Amino acid sequence: MPRTKKACPCGSGLAYEKCCGVQKAYYSLDQIRWRRAGQSLRRGLGMFADRPEFSFDAARAQDIYLGCLDQRLAESNDDFTMERCFEWFIFDYKLSGGKTVIETFRDERDEPESEQEDVLLKEWARSSISLYEVTQAIAGEGLIIKDLLSRKVIKVRDISAAADIGAGSVLLMRVLKVGEEYEFSTSGLALPGRYKEILLDRLRRDRREYFAKNEEPVRGWAPYLRERAHVINAWVMDLGISDSYPEKDQPLREMERRAILTVTDWQKVLEQLNNQDDFILIRELKDAAGFFRQATAALS
Image 1 (cartoon, rainbow, N blue to C red):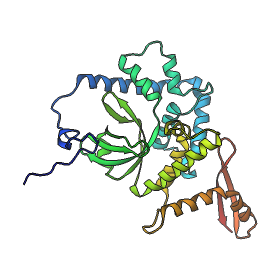
Image 2 (cartoon, helix red, strand yellow):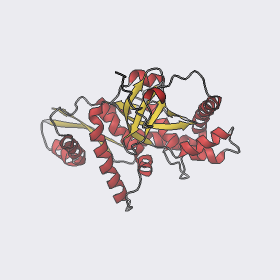
Image 3 (spheres, one colour):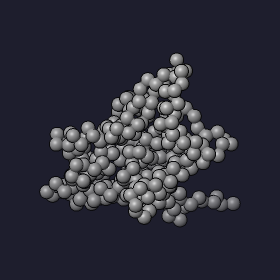
Image 4 (tube, rainbow, N blue to C red):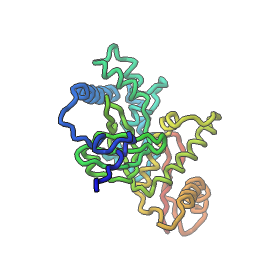
């Protein structure tokens, strides 16, 4: 009896062996040019963002980004956290002039180094983070991932990710198109699949609140994701370092609702701590805008 061939997870409708699973015996010279252009552009953007004239904005961006994080992460200044902060500064943070670093880089270029770089700049400037689910890890190649917001399925070229991340994982990443391929923009955040519904529910509610606050009708995901990228990143990182996670029989919505109440009622909690003899309020942590982020208390 002939073996049934599985359809490719990328959604092409073809068998995997005839689509993403094809073992290529050749390399596209055109795609090699795209890869080189992408690598050159990454270097150029990094050097441009590090220019002295951006030092004030870079410091302010770092304060805002780290101010959203759990205190343990904000104080660690590890390479992973700072790399993601720098990426956010380049792609999403609005400089004093109202544009992002990558938009400013594009506008100040007299001429792109190549036709490929010109295309990449335009596409990358419109990119945003998103929440993805890994549908398949292909050893030696990369990951097939599904955008949980747009439902788009793509294959990302990343050999190390294929070795470290399994199917079902949830990723918060920025994916960049490079010719006919896709790449991750920087190191990403991966969580177990059990957090998928928590994050999706929180994103949907926060998006509605974001547009309502701005007195605008709810639009597509991209504008919201670009504006709230640093906050969403903090949510995911908080989940990643949390010692607790949803119990098997605990409703996800109930758990999330309790977490939100804890954050929302922080002022009442502080007032109660100050009025109790058993607790000593040690310090409060505020972000760059002066808003409360975290408090440390101890039993007396």
